[in-house]
Image (tube, rainbow, N blue to C red; front, side, top):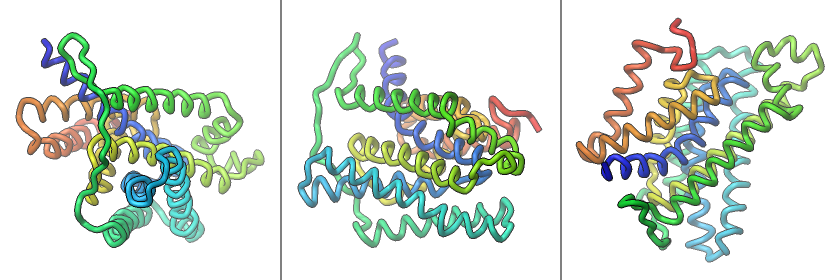
Length: 287
């Protein structure tokens, strides 16, 4: 039984990171009908910028966090302004956006490797361990989980109870009607990318502190986020939360019982399972 609870505890840590990425991907699809897999670059870049400001330049950690969030959010916004918006004006359809986001993912990863090198980067960061009935968690892991939950609550409140959220939901239902009613859909998309990039950047910083940094991390998080979004139902924020939880806990169980070598394999197996048997996801339709 302690093993079961330890797997759950480990899964909560990865869930705290995955859900911020998957939620952004699902949210952006609902708002723009774009599978923004390049959100993985924001995760990657946020971690490395934070490391550069804190470890390399010696800034105060709080200043490094703010700097990383600003830069990463700006990168997400620029992707929309200089890639997605021009494609939208040309009437590009789904396949064009998919090629563009994959190109951004590859290009962004290459830029990070060129700037920071291909070797992993580590933080000299340690916190105390806590024991709850034989289950181990660190103080930082608890903080990471609380930060993630708080951001999810804030995100839900923004979507459900603010004017921005109402306009966003109207645009997701019918963009043409929303424009007729006076909604500035272009500005709405800008804010959507800014918000999703901010959440992904937080996930990148938390991941860097917990697992260190690797230049392949952007692709990994793009796959994890996409898988969680598909499982929950693309476009459903609640579905992204459920999908992230399923991916996280199953991944940790596989690592515990079969070894880390199976971690990526199980994610792809899970993705193929849902794409073949229920492509609409848990909260989507079967068709």
